[in-house]
Image 1 (tube, rainbow, N blue to C red):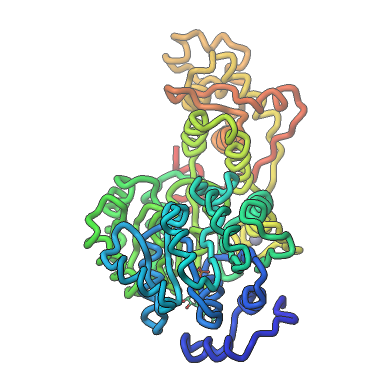
Image 2 (image 1 turned 45 degrees about the vertical axis):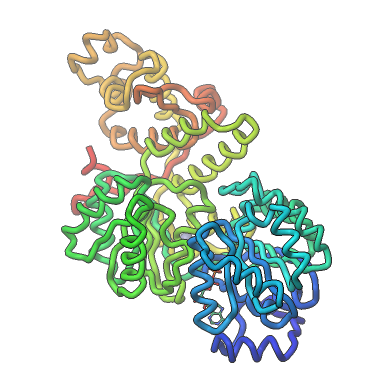
Length: 519
Ligand code: ADP
Ligand code: ZN
């Protein structure tokens, strides 16, 4: 659906077949290309793998003049240029690492370039704009356009400056492209880049072949090894730090799979070699930081695992979107812990006052996703403004629906214990107090004299950790500098009984997996 009324000149179809060797357009490509060929500014919102590049490459070849492509990363540009040249497209970039800049400038002036890639920093210089006025420009493509918005997860101030250049060449159609933009970001992109609302072309965001699963982290290496062992094919494991990738890669070697670590600290040659190896491999597991995967063309990635909390729902969608681009079944697993939220909130306290509300909203949305008892896909798509009428049947919640349980009273007890013990103790101590353990650490501090001592029965004990996770994720609990628990800004409503706390009932421990095994 959605291709209605797109009528393209025969040259576009001929180029698709001859240059790219494809039989037909996919999804929204036809509509986007039709608009650009018709000279209309457009924002194309398409999920990763939908084929955004083709949307500016075809107009670049069909229209007179050179297409100027704004791209945020040199590595990304060079990947794209390599791929474009491989099919005979005349593509080049002007970046600090290009030694052939003089030739590129000459080629641009004499109309011998189809695509010219530049970073926004370069595009914004007066020198570059003077150069543009000596050339014929066919279109502007603004890749990763969410970088223009402060609401996006990757704000790049230099993207803001692009508007000047775009307006100076106001007749040249502009095509902004992104895979990730919620409604606020989307509207901001339109505004910032001067594209009318009708210029928004949005593809369906659902990736039905990806099975989503999200679970609390208990024994990270074991949980991830389990997934890897039962999921054949190549996959990516995202860790949050360079050291994290190396540690985890070492531990996962015991799965017998071919495991590699990848991060920005490795020598460039090694990175390039590892990446090439991964692209060619059918079973390699790459443990990497999130920089890995951007611009990699590997359609048969069978799984993506997040070893910790991603930055946002959008980042999660984009990173998991690297799985199953060939349309075959693929899996996305996330293992998160309350400490991930605690760290993110700590980091939050350092961000700009003005950005605080949106960053908080981003974290809260993420909390909603990881703790949701309902269909993951429904929630995910709702975030992008898509409505899934029925639960998807292909996520952990749909396949294994949890019982939802009202734990408001238990949450109140937990919050009270945190409060009465002085908001400085960790979860272990709080549990001992609530369960009435006559532990020396409890007695010594006279916490056995508190009204909250022993008010939780052993039958409810297994719920304490999940409740704590929920409370932390939703800012009802906060973590102090020293790792103790304190009341968060949202605690009050719960304590006053004005807000109910509902959680997905933890799975019964079986086969050594699940809550019990963790502690
Ligand atoms: P995106 O940038 O949206 O993530 P790409 O532009 O990298 O996606 O394209 C993803 C893959 O789909 C590439 O391998 C590309 O060659 C392929 N592709 C794009 N358009 C088509 C099409 N119309 N038919 C077949 N394959 C396509
Ligand atoms: Zn579902």
